[in-house]
Structure formats: structure tokens, C-alpha cells
Length: 60
Image (tube, one colour):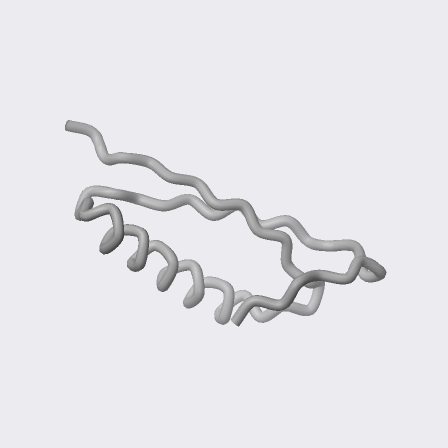
């Protein structure tokens, strides 16, 4: 049985700390595994950098 694959897209600010983003991505993947009840789930996060003038929603 192959692992179930999920993908999440995110837009980050140009000055975002990649260590913070990686930690947040790990937390999201862990939460998804718990909610879905699947230990074999993997997650792929695709990051895009926002234009400097674009206002972004804040997530913490």
C-alpha cells in the first residue's frame, strides 16, 4: 500500500524565516495525520514568495 499524499500551498513574505515555516509545516502535517487517523500520510508544502507590496493574511 503506497502512502497517501497531500499537498498544501502557501504564500510567504519575502523576509519570512524558513525555520519558522518548516516548524509550522511539521505541526500542520502532524495535525493532519491525527485528524485523518493515517500514520502513512506524507505532506508536501509548496511555497511562493509574495510581492513586497501585497498585503497577506497573518497566520500564527
